[in-house]
Image (tube, rainbow, N blue to C red; front, side):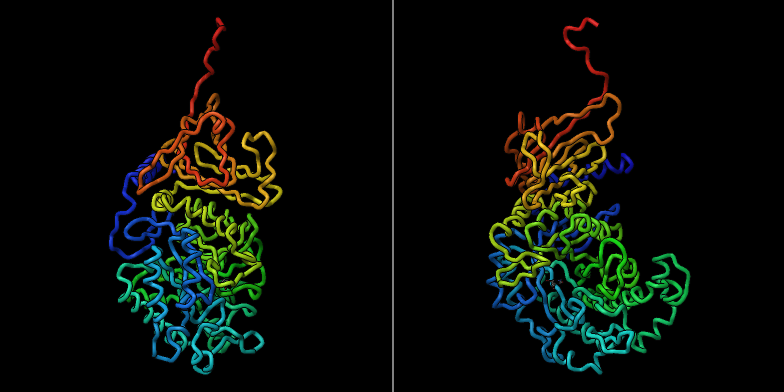
Amino acid sequence: MPRLIRACLIAAALAGLAQPASAQRASLPRIESAGGHHSLIVDGEPFLMLGAQVNNSSNYPAMLPEVWPVIDELHANTVEVPVGWQQIEPQEGKFDFSFLDALLPQARAHHVRLVLLWFGTWKNTAPAYTPDWVKLDQKRFPHMINAKGEVHYALSPHYRSTLEADKRAFVKLMEYLKKNDPQNTVIMIQPENETGSYGSVRDFSPVAQKLFDGPVPQPLLKQLHKSPGTWHDVFGKDAGEFFHAWSIASYVNEIAAAGKAVKPLPMYMNAALASAFGRQDAATYSSGGPVHFVIDVYKAAAPAIDLVAPDIYTRDHAAYLAYLGFYDRPDNALFVPETGNDRDFARFFFPTVGRGSIGFSPFGMDNTGYFNYPLGGKELGPETLNLFARNYRLFSPMEREWAQWVLAGRTWGAAEPTDPKAEHSQVLDLGKYKLTATFGQWQFGTDKPTGNPVPTGGVAVAQIGEDEYIVTGFDTRVAFSLARPAPFESMMMLRVEEGHFDDGKWVFRRVWNGDSVDYGLNFTDREQVLRVKLASHRGTPAIPVGNPN
Ligand code: DGJ
């Protein structure tokens, strides 16, 4: 990055230190992007979603008492909650918003914002949340047909009757929000949930086949710099998946655009992921959903969708980081709307926010007794919950500042690796300096790192000045060094302050010195934020005392 731009970005980040975080402006939430970095703007300022998603069947007033204790304990600032089509339109044309009548005031009372998940035509690719009058009328709402000519479980994206019915209900939802939520408690909407289809790469019905045999639409050719042709000509063996992605993305785009015409909240679609490494048969994953191979298709077909987002349930460290990389793009804000709620997932908060995500949200965060093991945990007891809660307690006082540093592109993060080749360490290249994080080491750091008993280590760093960093984490040992030292260049830790942010201001607690810095910086299970001032020095060593030469 050129020096001047970097200096401006750092100045902007530093300005964030002085600005009161509580300044409220009644403006609609939106995604803001600058220099390939992104932020969700809420109440006129960058906002980091410290999120939690409730279980699928927690969307009834009677279940909310089982939700709030977990959300409060977690220190979440945002809750993701489903709204089912069948729930709001059980009879065609008759709408029931009694759940939202209960949810919105309770969310405000608990000081959290909401993300609403529209379970419509697709919920985990299936029509389970459509009303009975949709499910039972396959003539009006046709299903896909597979390659063998059999009826598939998923609704087809090629019928206007289905699209119009879903759109009408979604628009009613947005009208409800426009009327009943002037304070924007709801900050973002997810139209549909994990779109696509398992077991059939696309719809093979005659209607779909005719489109498949036709030309690839111009916006997609432009997005991918391809020459005109049929789907097969342009995409070869991937044609079926790309065609299906285009069909679904166009369908959801129309629904999202109609909703935005009523109330233009940011909208995103979530992905049930394909393998991070290699290429599987598309029929074995959610073909047509916003998996990483087809993000460009969603960009071309769905301008009303602000971003596509990965639901990350892998426990594999390398795969987790790969997914973060796929969805973090100059044209796509990174967001993890779902992740596992087991102990080993909590640490992934650090590389996620370090990479500049607008938010992080473990799934199944309530007391309703449902556990989606092996995706998430087998329980959500106090120790497990605390591993997620301590992240949010650490970041809550500085979430607005963090989101500003993200927008300036000056944040990094790492999680404890489990791959033996990584030798329980991670290195972050911060430009002039590098940070080496090690896991499972005594505080003097003279022993070999062995990893923590459960992988819980994580560290996040933000640059707030030329040689100044905010560093925080858990169960991690941190050492700074020069990333590219010149001859005779050395560095020192000039000052390490422990403190916290309060309404945009740094509040000093103590200076770390002596053993606390001589042998590296040790983050334990304590909630500690450090402001680290480094200095580099260049020159030949001074002449030692007692040496006449
Ligand atoms: C991803 C879906 O989006 C969630 O609604 C839920 O079904 C989880 N998978 C599994 O628990």
